[in-house]
Image (spheres, helix red, strand yellow):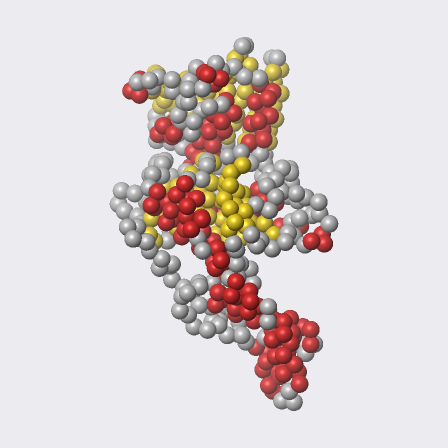
Length: 467
């Protein structure tokens, strides 16, 4: 991360605080404080998560920007401690220092007097307009959970305590949920608020969370004794609203897909290797044609040629190192691994979407077959209802899970079964499989496929995470 603006610097420090809290896997608190210290502003970001390992600060690179140089002296003051520490460590980190060995200066520590707690506070002083900075930080932390923003002005403290949590968020996600659960909930919340442009979920587009179909995928490198392996998590949301719903809501990027990318719990730009992996996927196997990949204000956008009317796709990535809760290890830079993990996780998420939603993301071939489903269903239902064999009719209705002999009900059920059978056979194109049956419960004869056998020359073997 390049510190080329006070706003970006604050976002980075807040994101680091969230990452430390997530690693603790317990209830934590994050606080951001802006205090005037004429002519400066004192900015403080504190959390009660795991103590800082200081390696995360190596991600912060000071860009020689004259504008920033006139606002900040490049110094961060850090106070941090972990659960096992008996002291609070005080450190001064000078990013402007050319000699790397002199950037970090350890100051006298303070005893914890036997108390057991952990946390970190990072503070700095800048020349900045406090109201404008407070507004920018407020917008940013609305995308987070339970952040306290305190702003002091003119000796009188004006505090804004914001708890950006859905009313039923705690019941949806237990405290110790897997990371993919938080990523899934976060993207769902983001999409339902139209990119966090609304304070609450849009009821007209997504009533009671409807119209959101979600698929997830996880891929990880093989573990070894020294490392827990690298993990790539992907969440894909396919949203669709009725053309007749009368909603005038408009997405910020129109019908293009916004790609959100996180690395080690921090938001960042998508890596080139992950972007290459996205473009290399055979989207036609999922009924999609990728038209272009673009960038707007630092946001990666995918444009499709044949996305259904009123449909949208959103994608979120999270790549991190699987490790113990007490240690933060940044992901290694391996373009080969990153590309493979991205492809694997995206395809798993797409297949998950197809499996959970019959008829969604079907290949071009499967869509052609499904066009005949209504006529075929009408013919089959006609054969059943015209039969004089009562036992035959009863057995057919029983297999379809029906008691009624109403023509429309029977036709619709058969049509749904046909589409479901086609979808089951379409989940893994090119893979040999047993034929799906029409008059069965979809869960009874569900075919389970093994890991994608796709393997490119020179790539390492990967397994799936047991998360």
